[in-house]
Image (cartoon, rainbow, N blue to C red; front, side):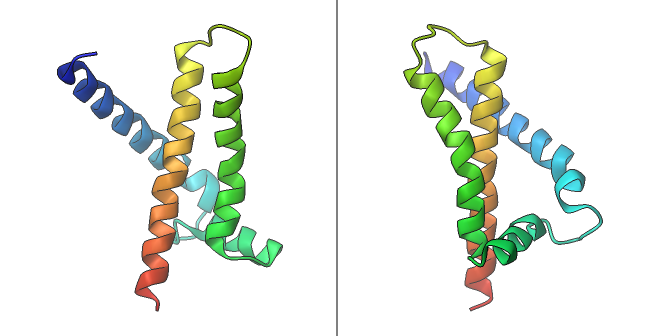
Amino acid sequence: MTQTEFNLLFIQQVHRCEETLRGKAKEYTGNNPDRLSAFKTAAALQECTPERALAGMMAKHIISLYDMCFSEQSTYDQSMWEEKITDSLNYLFLLNALVREGACNE
């Protein structure tokens, strides 16, 4: 893969991440203006930090990717790879937001 091809792939991936995050914001936050409220609610239910609650949710996506990478099935549709990779990246973006928010509140 050339650097130009990689740069295009990167731009397309970031665009997919943005579309997904924007599209699912209402689904996961309802009318709550706090974009991170789902993780805070999960943390309260689990008696842990929002970061740990997010990590637990993210684990499902990472395990799915791991299973795909080590599966005996030789190929998966590109759309499946894109979905799993996008979801995993988005959890990292959301984790970054939680970490930054926590640092600002200290």
